[in-house]
Length: 331
Image (cartoon, rainbow, N blue to C red; front, side, top):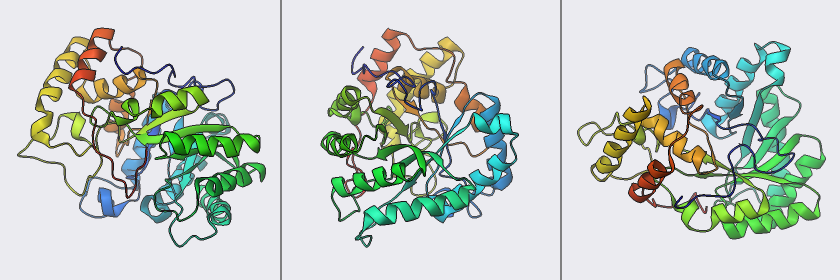
């Protein structure tokens, strides 16, 4: 199939903690007012709706939760920790939690700050050890990739995380981080990048093939283009707020959305489920956000079936390479 990867979702390398996970739960909106209107413009987004999304996701078999210190200035982590505490021991043991640290320009000793940030995240999450700790992105840091990778290895060696990953790294940066971590005997588990039918660039610029070569699992954030691939927005009803990812003009998307709708009808699915299934077929693990129970159930509907080779190729031809925000993204 066009642009396909040898790396299969949820089965990247032997021993990888992500093995068997085919979709995650994105929690950016939980507690985030600036982007998602939590406690602000979105009156339908609250702690109660976030918890309902959390519960429904687990009921549907999703077991990978992705959060970050930046999300809502730590509020997302606090909510995740609160929700996890309500699970019984058996339920809790099945859930993986991933979080991130963003190295800022003023973090001159980012290697040390990374460990400090992780300890603060663990306090908010009410955990002693996180399952996957990621560098949120390299673009804002004034320190080298090697310096940041040493920080990840320090966190791993300190027993603060089971696995380490990165986010928004390009192919060259992945190799540099992988080299440092290999010398420290620390596996590089994942690279989380923006990947969707509105941003196919990681599949086209060598990032996918590099990650496959190194056994690094691709995690896909904004897999629905911040809602644009759900089909609910039109030129007359554009997405609210500053939704910078997947930022393809709605007018240009219409042929793609029509094709997705046709494919969705064949499978008795929705356009968003087609978008997520396409990502899974490419070997990546999508991490769609869910503000409420309905969205969580919709997301899970992308599992348990598969697009045909012909359908994947049709979508490949109609998707967009997308843009790269170099202030934030490299990969």
